[in-house]
Length: 489
Image 1 (cartoon, rainbow, N blue to C red):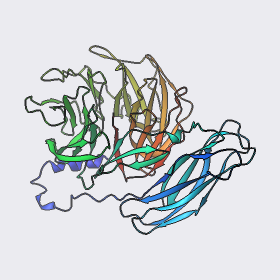
Image 2 (image 1 turned 90 degrees about the vertical axis):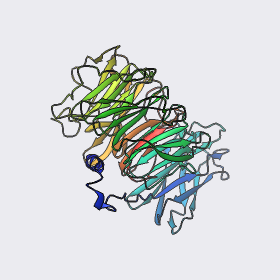
Image 3 (image 1 turned 135 degrees about the vertical axis):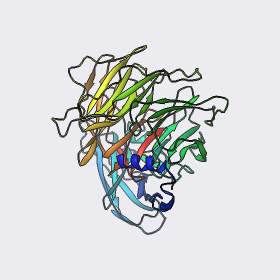
Image 4 (image 1 turned 45 degrees about the horizontal axis):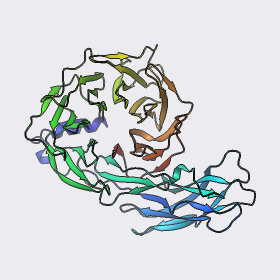
């Protein structure tokens, strides 16, 4: 993504590029297909042969055509289950030749000795290098379901460099929200959603666009350019809903005054402060209590500012000294603040240069009145991978997760349990697509959501509230090359 920053800076000089019209136009992004199922399979008693099917629907996106191979596997069963559920599909492939969706039948087979309870079947659709899943819940001899795939999510929005699109999860399937997709945007870089969930901002070349959200349906209505920064790298809306924060590639932190509906508040003035470096894409966070703003500044480190929404100039002078990278050649690429506004998390690359595979670091700071105090560890935490590009402290405050890149391989999520003085790594990690860029928790707290730049571009995990471990994900590739995700509150 570094090359995009140089392109966007160059675009700030329109006279130089006046003769290049067409060359800089965005390349269209083509999605592939989604899978869904018709809901919970309720088998009245072990061995029953009625009510044991679900319809799998393969829906093409955009102009996709081709053959989609279908496979199934039972991925969750009751503990020590005997004669567990088996699965089959008919047909085992479908051909997409138009915009019409195609279907197959999933059958869950039991015997008289199958253990009662809840099972989950993951159906995978594959076409070439693209793979998408849906997970069906099967109940045997019970009317209650413990399936995570039966859970639903709140609405969320995925950003690519050329589009914004809304989605939700129901019955283990990723579903597009009607009238929530806008394509052919120009070099988008960041997205932020208002605290009331009724508007969001999309940063693109030429400015920051305001979208109104229908809070009942999730549909978007596109507005015009609302704020005139041509090279925004990261956006946040403060918890009071009074200010839009913009970390610009010009090395400036802006606070734009906004109304309760997200439009510019012309009765107040904007504020701008010089940053100590150039912000990382998406590298901006504000504490839930609205008292601290933090910016990841690449090789310059991370910078934090006191913030008071009620002031005419809400951003105060930066904490001193700036937090320099732990490694001599390192970069700060992500920041986050825990839900209780106690801790600041900073993700860094090249913190441990002696390791070629696990060189990234997660640093943790206690937030004081006028200072940051780093945890008393011998060295920062070393999550799997080359650096955390997204950090998510979940709403309970009990766990924090970091999504890291790995050289030439799928990304990985490492989780930690949290106290006010230490983190403890969880026993298992979870795979993502290649180069994970964003994490979010949906409003129902049923799912942790991840987007990755390539491979499987979307994953949704459930979190075990007792252990913090992540479940087998619901996955798909609804868009190509996503760069950010936000969840409606």
